[in-house]
Image (cartoon, rainbow, N blue to C red):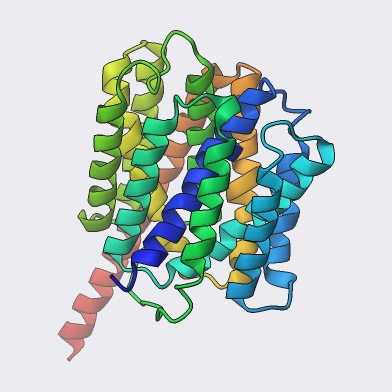
Amino acid sequence: MQRLPLIVFIAFELCYYLLIVQTGIAEHFGSNIYTIAPLPIGGIIGSVMAYYIKATNSNKIRLFLILQLFMSFFYPNFNFLELFILGISVGAMAPLIINELKKASKVDMGFALAISYVLGTYLFTFEVESRIYLALSFTIIVFISSLFIDKIIEIKYETQSFSLFVMSLWIFLDSALFETLSRDTTISIWRDGYSFEIALFHIIGLIAALYFKIEKNQKELLVVILFAFSYLLYFLQEAFILSLVYPFVISFYNIVILQTLLKKDLKTLSIYMVFIGWLASGAGLFAALENLTLFVPLIFLISLIKILTSQQNLNEVKKIKSKEEQQYVQNI
């Protein structure tokens, strides 16, 4: 029960980002990338500010949450300046949330993401223009929860680390497919009655990522293959199977990314969130809006070549080490 406020804090801020920032605002402005440009610009600045403002992590969180709450009253009719300020608040919250995740156990992380995915799935069809109530209530819940997480002690556990390039690639692939799907009237899995399947496989993906142990290169290969399969299902218009595979890979790779980011300090997190949270996702949005999704398979080909080459190099290193160990034993 001690960590319940932390779980709620993480879950509802993620819900805010999904339902208000990522989908609500974009839909309200007709996905016009030039109109909503102040939001990611503010987000980049906010991510950097999260580190450079001289205050405790708790005070920074409350400061930006108050700003987020204030801006939520203007939803969804933001002007240029209001979008920019909202971007600053959610941009700053991203690295601060991940920094707080260092206090979470694997179970805590799993529960927090499960709540956000399930709520996000079932509230996805909520009328965009009426989400002001969600924006205000989510922010208030997050703010109240933030008052009870100061004394929770950080948890240390070993995890694999993935490069910024790989994580940005996953975010791009996810963003491009998500933005394409959410705008496609012929195969929108969230609006076609697959909410239960989507929520269920989000949870299965979380469990698999937290407890299924495989090597780093194999994990990279698995994520890329699952994304490739998701894109193939989209092109084939196989909505039901897509509603199983795509949520699974979203949950799986997000846990992998979060576990990598937990090793970083706040300054590094701020820099990483500029690339992962805004540039990669923005590139995915651009690809979806400009109908460039058909060219994404080229990225899969490049990714597979890179992963297989890395695996080959790793195997050669292992063979060399094995020979050196055998030679050392013989010399003894």
